[in-house]
Each structure stands twice: as C-alpha cells, then as structure tokens.
Image (cartoon, rainbow, N blue to C red; front, side, top):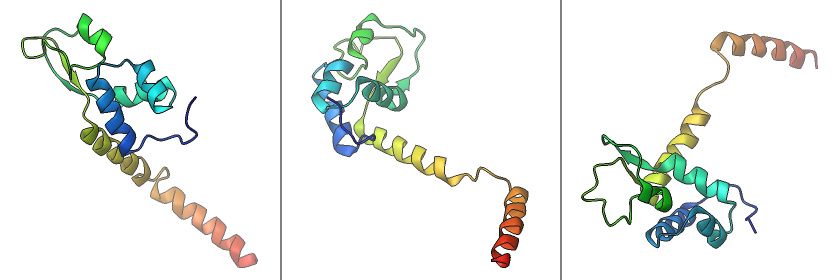
Length: 124
C-alpha cells in the first residue's frame, strides 16, 4: 500500500538509510515505508554519491544496491556507490530550488505578454 503524499521527506530518507544498513532491497524498503518501489528506486538513483574507480560493475552491489554495508568495500577497486540521507536531502532541496528559479520565457517574450495583458486590463 503506497502513501498518498508524492514526496519523500527527511524522516523517510533517514528510514531508507537505515533500511540500506540492514541490507534490505528496494521492494522491502518500499513495503516498509509504504511507498511504491519506483519512488524508492528513483530516490536512490538520484541521490547516490559515486566514487570513481577503474572497474564499473560489482556483483555484490547488484544485490545490495549500495556499498554502505559491503564487507569488501575497503579492499574493493570497483566504483563505489553510497547513500547518505543528509546529502540526499541537500541534493533534493537544490534540485527543487534550481527547477523553480529559471524563467521559462526570455525577457522579450515576457515584455510582449505584459503589453498585451496590460491593454486588456485597461479595457476592463
């Protein structure tokens, strides 16, 4: 059963982090939090921090999603992926701010629309 609210909040991100520490998969995390598994998957995909390495694939991480709890992460030469709820919250807030701060129209288009609307308002 999924929640009606569309966005994850800070508490949800803390719970996701805790579930990852318990080595839960996306489906189990979604069931525990009451969100659709696509919401959890999207959260992880958008907010995982990657540390570059020479080798890109890891069969252990394919099961665990992230390297947070991998016992071999210190010895591994593969690309590492970490989820941290604090960084996830910062990344999310930055995305929300930047998506709203850019006007969709250029200055000339806004000026033209303003002139047209002002004339209409003047006519009553």
